[in-house]
Length: 172
Image (cartoon, rainbow, N blue to C red; front, top):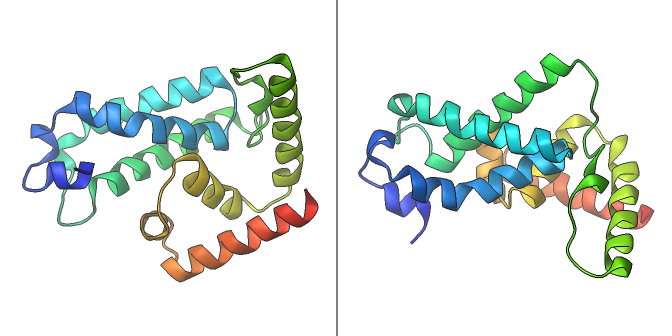
């Protein structure tokens, strides 16, 4: 059963927030990891997102948006607020190579090299494209939900992502 099915007929106030956190926290965390990179920031912003969602739970309206859409809109706003407070101190994926890795030293070194390369390749992308990459591959969100979050059409999201991935592959 998906989260959306589990909340059908309930408001956000009646949700089992432990289940919501268990289901959605990895996706929110990965979204921030793709956008910011630094572990401490990622953990803090993930916590802020759920705190803000909890405080705003009475305002959630199922008739306006699915729960995941509502939650990720909060995450986007948390990220924007954070970036405003930092005023250019962080670039997306700036500290992705600081992420903990599991495996052998060779695997860890290869992963660090790949992350550094990805950081270089995405650094000059427009913010909209970096946001789409973070939502699609970091948060594992489908194109329909990304379209709702960004105001783009679903086909436009797919087209942009396809072009960005092709560009990144050609430069890899």
